[in-house]
Image (cartoon, rainbow, N blue to C red; front, side, top):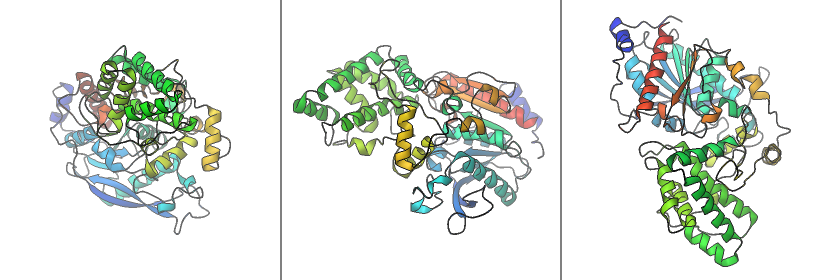
Length: 479
C-alpha cells in the first residue's frame, strides 16, 4: 500500500496545535449497501445454507473522499444494527471531513439485518456460525472486495470501534495488519472479556460512577433495595406497595419474579452509567444529561429511598408509561450487564455463552446492589440448557487473540481510549504498552464518549482526548 501524502499546510496545522474539527452535523446521511459474504469462511469442504452465502449490510459515505489519496475510515460493527453505531460515532465523520476519507461502517453478522439464515438464524443448528473469527473475516473480505470495487486497494485504512466493536478493531489490527493500518479501540474491555480481571469489578465500577456523582448515592441506593426486599416478605400489602411505586403491570410473589425485578432495576443503573453523557442522548435509551446524577438526586430527595429507587429506575424505562412489564423491558441472559431485546439479545446471549467471559453478578459487598450471583458454574448450566453447549472453553479467546498486556504488546498502531465514568473501564488498556500502543484517558467520559460527535457540553478532557487520537492517526498514517 502506498503512503498517504499530506500537504505541508495540512501537516503544519497539527504540528502547531491549531487544528479544530470542522462543524459537521453529528449524523451524516449514508448509502445503505450489501455485500455477498461466505457464511463459513473456514470450511473448504462444504457450504452452509442454500448457496453458502449471506448479504452483509454496510453503510457508505464518500462525501469527503479524495479518491486515491484519501484514507478509508472503517467502523467494525458490534452487537446491534449498524445504523445505531453510525448515529453514535460523529467523531469519525468529523475526522473524515478533515482527512478527506471514505467512510464505511460494516454490520456484524447475526445483528441488524445481516442474518445469514434469515428468521432461522438463531436456531441451534444455525447459530454456530456466529463468532468473532467469522466476523473479522467478514470485515477483511469486505474491505478487500470494496477496495477493488471503489478503487481504494492502495489506500490506508483506519478502523474505529466502541465497546465490543472496539475489541474487534483491536483484533482486526492484530489479525489483519496488512489490511488495517491504524486502530482506535474505544471503551474496549479486552482484559475483562478474556477472563483477566475480577468478575465482581463491573458492578463495583457502576457503584463508583454513582459515588462520583454523589458520595452518598451508593448508600441511598442500598437503602432503597433493602426496603424493596423487605416489602417482598410482607405479603399482599408489601407487593401492592412495590407495584404502585414501580408502576408495574403485574407482580408475583415468587423467587423468579423477585430475582428478575432486582436484575431489571440493577440494569437501569448499568445503562445509565454507560450512557452518563454530559448532554441528553438516545444511544442506549432516551436519557437526560448526566443521568446518573439525576438518578442519584431522585434517590436522595424522594419521600422514601424506595420511592427514590423507583423514580431512578423508571428514568431509564420511562416515567410516563402507564405500567411496566419487567420481562419485556429486561431479558436475563448469559451477560449480567444486559443483552438488549429481540434478535440482537439472542445473538449476544450466544456470544456471551461461547467466546467471551462477561462479568459476574452483584454482591452487595463490593457494590451497591443486592446479591445476584452469576458464577462460572451457573453460566455453564444456563448455556448448556439454552444453546446445547458443552463445557466452556474459557481460555480460547486469550489463546486466539490476546488476554493480557504481554499478548497485546505484539500488536502496534492501536489507540485505547477509556472514560473514567464507564463501568467497562477497569477491564480496558489503561497505560501505554509501547510507543505504538497508546492509552487515552478520558476523565469525565462515559462509554466511548470520545467517538461521539462534538457537542458544546463536552468536557475539555474529551476534547483533548480527541486531539490526541487525531494526532496519532496523523502520525501513523504519514509514517
